Image (cartoon, rainbow, N blue to C red; front, side, top):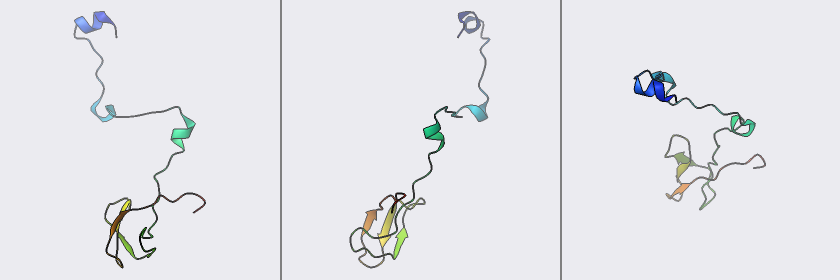
Length: 77
């Protein structure tokens, strides 16, 4: 920042819609996607579960009635 602009209240303001805009040059980060979660109960292996969180990361089993953190599915699952 130029000290001259700071003292003269001549600063460039960031538009409100771009205040939290994030850009990266990393190809690894650009390829990242949201994780997918397994619907299998980690206690009884029942597939009849309901999501307690919108993303499916926390679930409840309809058979054993336990709540659990779902496993993240990998490409070889």
